[in-house]
Length: 361
Image 1 (cartoon, one colour):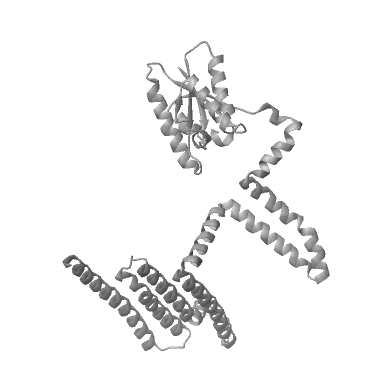
Image 2: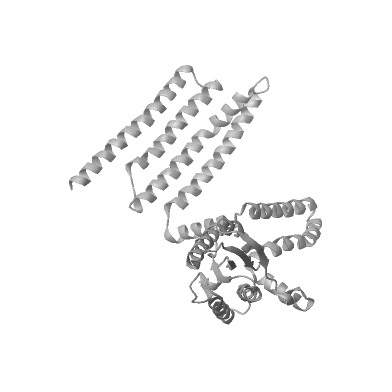
């Protein structure tokens, strides 16, 4: 038996009509195609469904069945999984003793990405891609371009870099008037580079979700937004302080500074600022968890751990720079370790006592 399998990977059939999938049977597929064409005459999946019916009518030397399967809109992985599940249901409904082979009908390369999933379930004799004939003529070029530019994803892919390139000439004229022409090419190159990297790594959704979280934090009064900004400022100050300490160390040293002393100078100059940033962000997070009703005593370990690590690093860096004695190093190492252990033990005991009190109540 030959199974003509019409694939709609992004589930236009299910989203735009009331048809339940998978659709099995030539008449049922034709009815689904008519319903989809009525709902959206421009949808290319209409042609896929009608092509499946046409192929079934044109093959007369063997038993043919037509079916339409759909995925989901969004993730390709989820769509492929959904198509595989519907193919399994179609094969179960056929209930034939004959060997089943499939002829896959799609409307483009994106839908054909599911072919390996189908092949893992049934042998595939071929793949038929449906192309609308008038879309290849010059008379439809305007319509095709309009449809491409109406697509938000395509519009962002094509128009953003094109717009940046078109800005080069007017920005160059402006830069010549202001006397710094090289800046324009650097800025334009940076913009193009950032855009290409964002597209290459798929950061659009990440950036959108980050902006959405920041907007939600602004309107819901989240404490972490303020503490993270303050922590970022403290880390910037710490970086500058570390570089200044390195410069002073290099100036005071009679010989070139080695790798160990370089690292020690950077840590010694910045560790107090980094520790302040860590404590600020961790306290903001603890406050947020408390306000959300998800507070645990173990969360309070974070600022003490930051202090412990900062004490150890400060002692080690100061010792290597000759700013502290061996006794000071021993005190900082011991004090940092004991502080971490004491906080862990204390909050564990408080957490255990709190749980027993809750159970007793």
